[in-house]
Amino acid sequence: MDAAAPRLVLATPPLADAAGFAPALNEALAAGDVASLLIHFVGVDERANEAIARALAPAAQEKDVAVVVAAAPNVALRAGADGAHVSGCADALAEAIKKLSPRYIVGAGDLETRDDAMRAGEAGADYVMFSDLDRDALIDRVAWWSELFNTPCVARAATLDDVAPLARAGADFVLLDAAVWSDARGPAAAVAEAQARLKGERK
Image: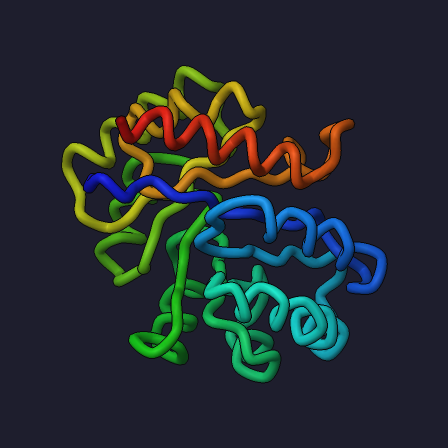
């Protein structure tokens, strides 16, 4: 990791529409150095999800925030997103890489084992994401990956208290979702605090 890393990634909750979420998103994006926005969707209807992504993406992209959608590659392309986030390391990832790489970002998440993560990296994923592990296991997985592999690693911080430990473990990006959107102080305050915690790790 270099002195400029890690950076923040924001992930939306699963969305059924864009309008109700846009104000909170705009607050969060204005509060810190956000590298990427990952948009999640409630449903699987590609046209509906494309409309949501198309509505939210410009506010992020105007701030040089890459927009990645947790959806099929076609949604990313039609919505003007910067890439797609894929679950697992199998056929869906291979298809996304074939359709999108190298012009667009293709990330892999829901990687249950170390072998899954290695397969995703070998397949050509632009990043691997570690999330559904308890805190100690997540820190261990991030430290293992950062020591051995060059593919960037995104680690999900379940709470703001997890931001600094994941940064110290070697995460290139720290992802925040519920810890931002459910913060009683508002999303801007949560992002600002997370940013401060990351800066503390860069000294």
